[in-house]
Length: 487
Image (cartoon, rainbow, N blue to C red; front, side, top):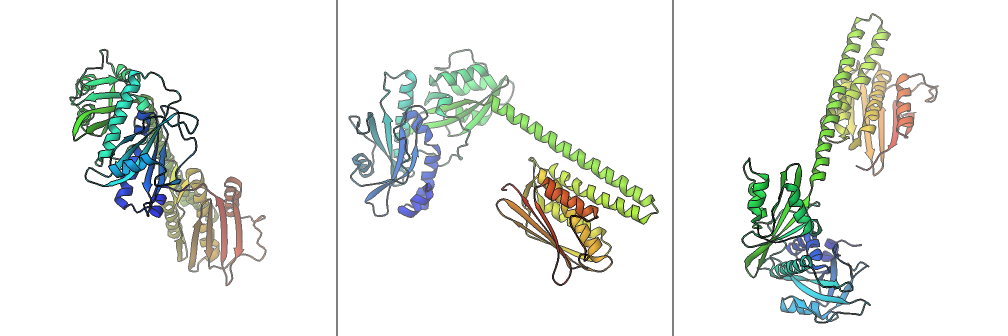
């Protein structure tokens, strides 16, 4: 299905500012659909002005839908839907008298012109379709919803909604069904939905909420012994389109204000309310867990560095060159693992930017090399899970060490680390221009501990492929290919 931006750019003459306004509207028009108990379809004129194109659609969560199939991308000729034409031409909300029964269920149709800002032009028309099949005598809640929807629709027609100065709405912002308060222009509650009242009961309210000054009531509940949050007074009075949170007695409630400005004056506000106590508790648990994990990685890194220091000290006390070299190799292997844990200790997630680790492993190898060897990396590893980063760090350490020790001995040379990564695989080539492989080399039967470690990690642990071959003109080339999740 084409995106809203694609449809507007390809088939209409709307400007980028018009598209931005439409994006802002569509990001928040679930509110209008839920208050209206109705489906919403946004129609915009095509480039020739002879057809209407449906570029966005929203179904209500508070009532039955009219359109079970998606209509985005559909176009109709001008004149086929007269209410759309009238709303566009006359710049006013149009309401049909009798329900439409053509689909087998009664549907009430209305159209709302969409104005871009108070001084802007009309850029589209919202078709609001209400399924009347379950119509009954409306309750106080439904009447409040419908009156609020009418006010909001008028704000759309006047270019006052969405709010141009408002920050983008969060995915977890309160919805109509979470809890709704309607305020008058003085900030007093004229209606409280059952869910909204329950949220305030959990905050500690014992009196009736209707008739109360919401700002003062909320401040008395939550800020009796500390300075009042300034955002709270703006939100709770309905004067600014903002969000805030209040907490009392372990209960956390999120508030979002929608000022109702109709005919040039503020007539009141809607305040959406959501109890986010459990959500915030889980977020705090995750933060605690993340901090604990980072601390574990930090301690593991310290322990590994202690082990490496002990091995290095032991190597210095040995008179056997082979024993010293074996311990020094162990120091490098432990050090490569410590680097991974050091990076993980600084990151909030179990994902690491591996390029930094690779460069540190390369620098560590070059520092301890007997010969003058230049090691260069091209390409990027990107972000890798910790479960992949640790074995890859060890593999890279072993391959570089083998290239430096066995490829060059006491001569100088170059080592290339070439990295290629696509959507689901990581390929690494470590190539040197040294003396090359022995004539009878067999990867399966090699006695090299380093290559055995590499083969175990690449093939056994990472389910990858490993290949070792000589290069034309001398030298050795090692190729590894492993599956990785997309970054």
